[in-house]
View (spheres, rainbow, N blue to C red):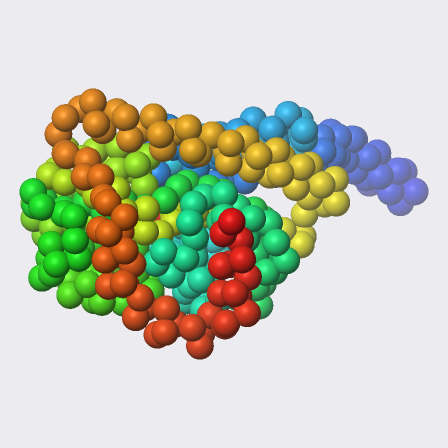
Length: 339
Ligand code: LMR
């Protein structure tokens, strides 16, 4: 016997309602509960200014947006090395990265300002420039390429190291091979010294130093210590000739698509994590310098005023070469940030 049409319709409707009542709450729940996963990848160790900043950001973001975001931090090039992280960000494989300011020159020539040798006297001057209108404008200078800067994070001033005993004057590095970050300014800097620069990912540096693929490198105390470069170098000259700082960047399309409350919470978390990491940076570098001295493996070479003047003079041609790309106005503003 066939079911009459109205009855059949009612039965079907009831079945549909029952099915919906079983599925829809689940869906609604999933929609309200599934957190937005934010992958934050970087190349340094956790016990560094950037490593600590990333962990602090995770803690604050998850506290401010409970159940709404989940931040996953991947240190030490676990997910991507520095050669791949920008592409990964643009492809949406990761949502936050914090490359050194030396690694952006494919996206904007202006950021090369941070690599000009002996431009900033110290990290406080770098901070003043970053905080000023020109520095803040640089955060937004790559949105046409899909990159949005959310903050600057400090590491510190760079020192020069080699596998040679003598490292006080520019002549001591003539003909030596140096690992550099992917930066045309840094390439020009080592060429001005008569040395041979090689662009290389951060994760490969220790082995390259150990096996003699390169003779030296330049980096902050915290990177030298946490990567154990001092164990495979003979001398570290305290040149303070440049800076390694970071821009925390996100994919601008992804960012624009975030719900307003999430964007607000993440912005606050980023501001607080920035204050935290930037306060810590100097202490970590001072501590790591001491640990390197105590380890007694590489000698720390202090430089006289005359020595420093000789390095400054040898690197001077770099300024002329990049002034056109960077812009005189930006260089003037950066110089004004020195006290
Ligand atoms: C380097 O490549 O030497 C640094 O930029 C690494 C880092 O992120 O501090």
